Length: 294
Image 1 (cartoon, rainbow, N blue to C red):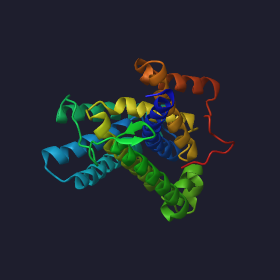
Image 2 (cartoon, rainbow, N blue to C red; image 1 turned 30 degrees about the vertical axis):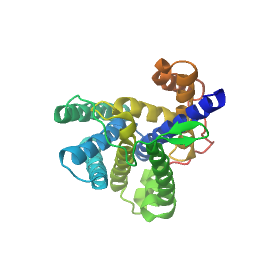
Image 3 (cartoon, rainbow, N blue to C red; image 1 turned 135 degrees about the horizontal axis):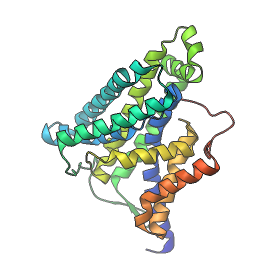
Image 4 (cartoon, one colour; image 1 turned 135 degrees about the vertical axis):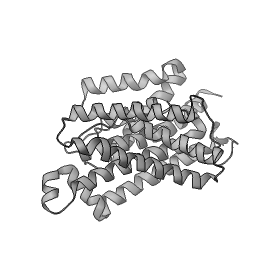
C-alpha cells in the first residue's frame, strides 16, 4: 500500500469513528441545551444499546432488527426513568450537583450491566456480512456504511424534528428561555424529559451500529462517552453542524495520529485535543457568536 492509499485508509477510518463521536456528542448537546447540565451517563446508553441488542439476539433468539428496536426502546425508557427519578426531584439543585448525579448514574448503570451480563466481551454479528469493500486501494467493512447512513439519517431527522415540528420547536423554546416557554403554555418538565429520551435513543443507536466493529462489554461506554463529550466541546456545545464537525475532526486526528505516530496514543489524542480546546478556545472551534441550541 503506497502513501496515498494509506492516507485514504486512515481518512476512511477517521470519518467512520468521527460519525459515532458526533452522534454521541448530539446526546450531550441536547441535554445540556435543555437543562444546562452535562450528562456523563451518556456513554452508558451507548453501552446499553449494544448489550441489549446482543441479549435479545443471542440469548432470547430474536431476529436482528426486532432486537435493535427493543434495545433502543428499553434504553430510551432508562433515560426517561433517569430524568424522572434522579433529575426532576432535584429541580432547584445546583448544576454541579446535577452533574455529580449523572456521574453516579453512570457508575450505577455500568455496575448493573456488569452484574447482569458479566465482564466478558461479546461480539455482535455485522449487519451486512464480513466481506471488506475496496475503495481506491483502501478497505472498509460494510458496517462502516451502516455507520455513515445512520449518522446522516439521524442528523437530517434531528434537523427536521427541531425545525419543523411543534414538539421540536417547543424544545428549542425551552432551551432558549424556560420561563418564557412556560408562560406561553409549554410544559418545560415534559420537554426536559423528552430531551433525555431523545438523547438516550441516539446514544443507544450509536452503540448498536458500532457493536459489530468494537465488540460489546459492560464498560465500553466509558471511553466512547468521553470522546463524544470531546466532540461536543470542540463543536461549542451545539447540536448542529458544530458537533458534527467536532466529531469528524476528532475521528480524523485519532486515525492519523494512530497511523503516523503510534496506535498507543489513539485514546490519548482525544484528551489532548480536549485540553487544548478548553485552554485556548473554550467556546469551541466551530461556535459562532450565537450558537444555535438544540
